[in-house]
Image (cartoon, rainbow, N blue to C red; front, top):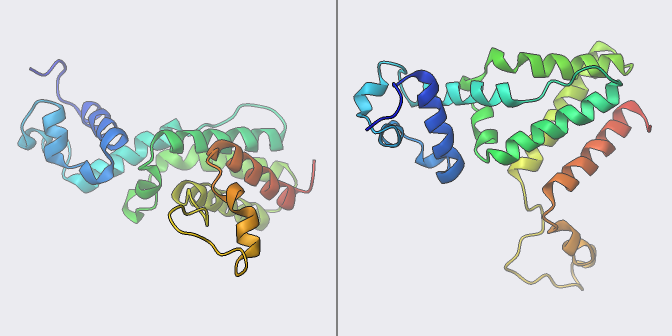
Length: 196
């Protein structure tokens, strides 16, 4: 028997649990209904369809993205983007949901505002701040989506044909995603803002 009344919040929480543990492909209204010990028809009193469920999941995700408090602009940027990276690592489905054009949400505006304001405060003009925001966002999404660039296991690389790849392959397959993202983020910020 269901322990709590059915609500949009309960539906989103169940959807997040399913997506976290079973993947986005498993996230169907039937599966959410089973998780909540109710019938699928009951969900339609609170959400229209799976598309709306994904939009609500995206809103829930956006609320988890950090908006740093006061401090130097570069420190705020590092804290904010490392925090966003942590949220996305905790929810492997996040990049796919965020990239859906139909799941754009105003809930993400505080994150964008904080990041762009920090770029402006660091000395960029409006156009450069917009470019910097997009570049950092692309770095984040790209690192989350592609967790094995050229470090693909399962085949032999001939060192005579691919000497550079052979030499760097152990580093390309290194799996410390947090350290990798932090390094990349710092390099990107150094390129945009100048070295510290």
